Amino acid sequence: MGQCSSATKMRRKRKREEECCRESMERRNKGCLAMVKERRSRFYIARRCILMLLCWHKYANS
Image (cartoon, rainbow, N blue to C red; front, side, top):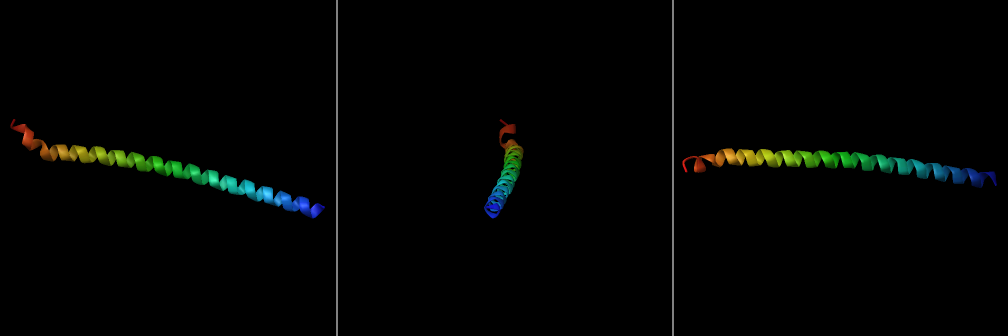
């Protein structure tokens, strides 16, 4: 009887550890996604500004 209860406890402990690892991975992924989105938006803004500066001569004489 004692062996069954200790095996059950070990399974529960392992399951909790797996859930903890999964949660930390999800948090890390959310942080990475936020960073990627921010960099993508910054790159978009920089690209638009550079394009505007390069093409400004077309509209400067108008």
